[in-house]
Length: 54
Image (cartoon, rainbow, N blue to C red; front, side, top):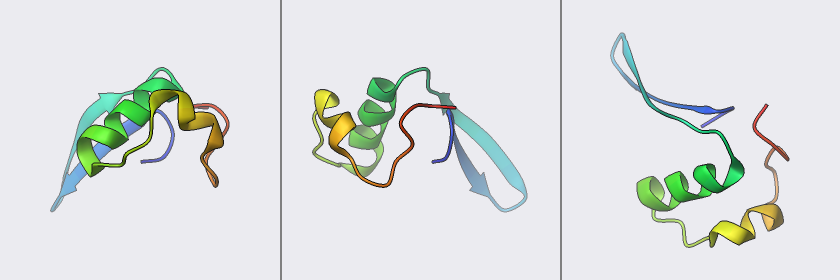
């Protein structure tokens, strides 16, 4: 999950799952896909992440 696009690759095919427009959308997606218990407002406290979708 790098940048604003989430992709799934199966074999030689790649499918775009979602294009995110904000950090809040990124956190919501991480909660749904990976079960990460981060509140939407807590995105600013995450380490090792880009400050904004670029």
